[in-house]
Image 1 (cartoon, one colour):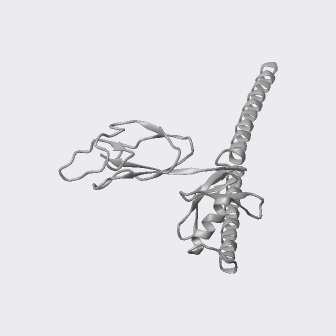
Image 2 (spheres, helix red, strand yellow):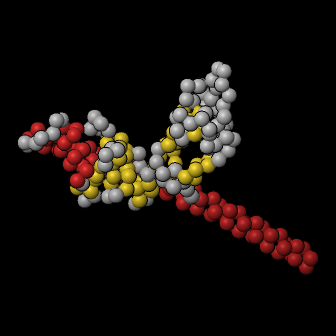
Length: 210
């Protein structure tokens, strides 16, 4: 009888340990589902960021619309409304949120000093930045131009300062030509990247086939 009692206690202890381990595993899975990068909280934050970015874009577009109205309501020496809007934005214009938007000669659109998109020649706005929490993160496009050939890799998006590995997974072809590599200028005769390589992104970049 004593041996049977000891065995029962041993089995009970093992069962208790297994139960505790299972519970710990379930707790870990639950935490990951809620707080992981792809968890409920992460997705909720991403939704908030997208909504905030949409609001910023709307504020900028409304301010540009106001500037366009000013052009027609005031005396000025500008040939067209887009030149007027660009000149005003080069001086800096405050939007309702309190941020100051500016542009430069290249059309780069800045939000409190951070590049967020582009003021297009027709006066429309393209937003390239993304919000990461409370910080605006500018993303640039790296694209591949077959330079007269056909095929090649697709474009990709990268944060400012990110190191990009040049894509050689799909190389372009052209009749009578041999692909030598990629260069950052269209008329290059010697490629910068022949079979591998990387560079740091600081703006929209096009790699041309050599």
